[in-house]
Each structure stands twice: as C-alpha cells, then as structure tokens.
Length: 195
Image 1 (cartoon, helix red, strand yellow):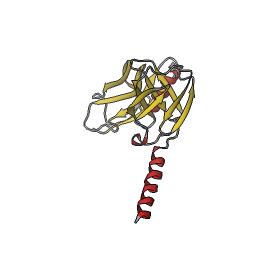
Image 2 (cartoon, one colour; image 1 turned 30 degrees about the horizontal axis):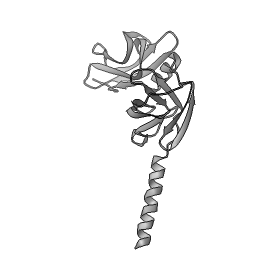
Image 3 (tube, one colour; image 1 turned 30 degrees about the vertical axis):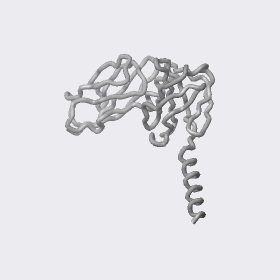
Image 4 (cartoon, one colour; image 1 turned 180 degrees about the horizontal axis):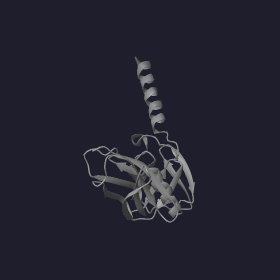
C-alpha cells in the first residue's frame, strides 16, 4: 500500500514539473506605459494560453498575465519597480530563465507584432454590418478595403488605437482584402461577407 502512494506521489511530481516547464518566447518587448507592461511574441503559434505562466518575474518585479492570444502574451507590472535595463534583462518564465536584449519597442516592432496578432471578427461576417479589427498594440494606419478584382471599395483611418470598427453595410457578399498601410509597411488580411 505504501508503494502505491509513493508511485502516485512521483507521478504527480513529474506531471507537475512537465506542465510548469516553459519554453522561452521568441521575442520580448518592454512597453513603457503606466503600469509597465511586457509583451512576448512567438514566431510560430505559441502554446495554449492556459499553459503559459500566470505570472513572471523580471529584476525582482512581478508581472501578471493580462492578454493572451495565439502569437503573444502581455503581462502587466503588479509589484516592484519594473525592468531596470530594457536593453538586457532576464525573465523567470515558468520554470525557465529567458534572456533578452534590445527590448525597447520600436516602430518596426509594433508593426511586426500587430501583423502577428491582428484579428478580424467576425470572419466570415454573417448577419452583421460591422467588421472589428483588433491589435496587440496601438498603431496608426490607412485602412483600404479591396474587392478581389482590385477595386477600392472602402476607405478609413486608424488613429493610435488597438481596435477599429468598420461599417461594411455598403458591401455585398464576397471575399475582400483589408489593407493597413503605414509609411513603412503594410498588412493585408482576407475577410468574407456572407449576409
């Protein structure tokens, strides 16, 4: 009987260690807002949000998981003074220690992150007249919607925001391309209307 409890104990310990073991995210950026935030971005789809750490530690400061999606995790400062040197820092991420350099968020980084994390919803659009666009970070861009034959059918603007609702009631059923353009780059995503 004692052996059964011992084996159950060993199984639970090894199971817990396997679940808490985390691979370091590919990229990390410090977002200088109040309270400070840390954004992790995965080059490929990351692990399910439920298996990512609920809290991380950087330079003795604790951060709590806020937003999570397929390609990113965003942590908010909960206690401590924050990252001491955003050019070089180590993160306790689950049971792993991850080292990052040049973690200051630049314009190209914002665009890279938003390209990975952009969400169009609903898609396909059924019985709705609004397309919602969501990003991980604020950005400004021109918004153009094209039909598949290349005709510009709708124009709008995104002004330093993480989301935008676009009225698509004037568009008929079909497949469209949404193009977001800044001075340096563009993102193109497909959406479908099936009203």
